[in-house]
Amino acid sequence: MKLGSIDFPDDVIQAIRKEELVVFAGAGVSMGAPAELPSFSGLAEIIARETGEEKVDEKEPDDRFFGRLNKNGIQVLSLVVKALDTPPGSATLLHRNLLRLFRSASKVRIVTTNFDLLFEEASTGLFSEATGVYRSPALPLGRDFTGIVHVHGSLEKPEGMVLTDADFGRAYLTEGWARRFLIDMFSHYTVLFIGYSHDDVVMHYLSRALLFENSTQRYALVADDMTLSKNKKSDEWSFRGIFVVPFQRPSEGDYSILNEGVSKLAEYVSQNLLDRRKSLVTIASGMPPIYDEGADQIVDAFHEESTRRFVLQAAREPAWIMWFDSRKYLDPLFKEEALTVKDELLAEWLVDNFALKHPRELILLISRHQMNVGSYLWFLLGREIGSNKNTKKDQLILSIWISLLLATMPKTANEHILLLLVERCSVIGDMNATLTIFTKMLSHRLEVKEEVAWLGEETQKSDEIKLDVEIISHVGKWHLSEVYTKHIKPFLNQLALPLLSISIREMEARHATLVSWGKSNGNWDRLSYRRSAIEPHEQDRIQHNQDVLIDAARDSLVAIGDCPAPRQ
Image 1 (cartoon, helix red, strand yellow):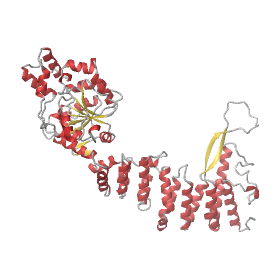
Image 2 (spheres, helix red, strand yellow; image 1 turned 120 degrees about the vertical axis):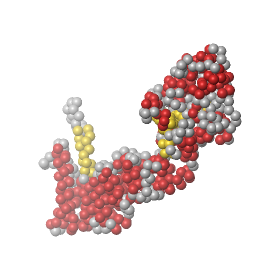
Image 3 (spheres, helix red, strand yellow; image 1 turned 180 degrees about the vertical axis):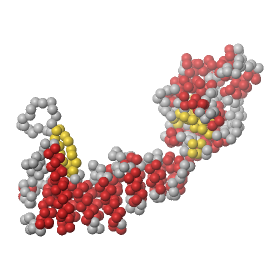
Image 4 (cartoon, rainbow, N blue to C red; image 1 turned 90 degrees about the vertical axis):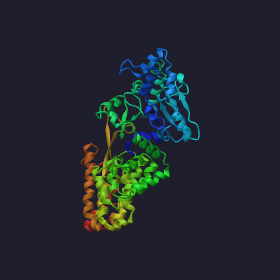
């Protein structure tokens, strides 16, 4: 989602909506106006000037420098408290906007290594109720907390601040309370780092908790110029399992792009449903957007059922078919698997808006998916084509749809849809399509199962499994009979020859299949042995699918030979 000039990861936006995001704030958050507080390294420089002490060398870590001063009897804590003291009203817009990512004070999840109290100040001006606050070493459970967590302590209780190398050792090694909290937190929440550089002293200690195999997604907002050769420092972040979300600084110390991006993110996630609907309808009513904020909003909307509905209710241009398909949203519709409600909405949108109004675009879509159509989409298409009387306006399109639906018919095709299609073809007098559908209904599939011995039947003692087969028709006897008696038999004067050929071919195919499995032979047919005679007979009152096939062949012969019909 591009907001302002920052591409925020989809994981972050979804985590905000699900109330599963933790903002992890570093010194950079408090370095802007009006607070203008120093970084951890800047703090070390201030203390060095105050005390007249200098680092052993440029490579001496800041925490070790503070520890050395403390061992020499210098009151480092009191100097730090003085250096970080700010007057009321010092909270920055960034503090406020980060808090706005959460719906209320009771939903806030901010973890910070900062000692200042600027998040508390911003929270007081933003929320009507108080936000919970925790300070080291008394930290909450990392897996279940809300509020502002000062994982390294705060100015309110300086004695708990993590400042020296000895303090860090206790927090992350010997006592490990900071590490335990963070490991637990990283395993349960999506985390957004902001205000850190990869080489901050704090990050070196945090890495002890970051490298945890069950951690969730972690992201860091990082200035582009801080990633060096576009890769070296970025690799330092990825080494810790953190994905970089880059932003550009117009100049050194200018974080306006970051402020704008976080502000827009806060505005976007705080939109109510009506605002989102208005925005999505405006975008979807026209042609699909190309790689801009509008496109990102549509992608974001597709995560939720309600907002997906808003988009689909407005999207009417055929170009949306390709737009959705290129992003793989339509893929589930062409697989034989259960669909989610959100997928069903897409199937309904396709059929309602394009099956009859823009059929060629939809047919090309099916072709791009190798002529595979899922059961639900096939059902909707068949119902739309079969029940819409306007299809008679374009008989060619109807014939094309009939052919395509028969070619893509799933194993569990809905029998009523086939009947609907026959009725529609019959109404417009398309006997060729009617006969084509009936042929498909007559066709069969093979089912293999373990043979069950009849009671009292002698069986040889053997470990060999005996197999049995069954010829299964695609539709039941009632639907076959309904189509034959109402839509085929009355037109035998036109259909007798092709119907006879179809009937013979199907009976031969069924018989050949059974012969292959040793279930029929040249003198006996398993399927037709129940039929006492080719003509109607009182012993054949219990009908099967095979009977419709036999009747069709018999009636065709009668029509062709122009001989008297059998006595009813």
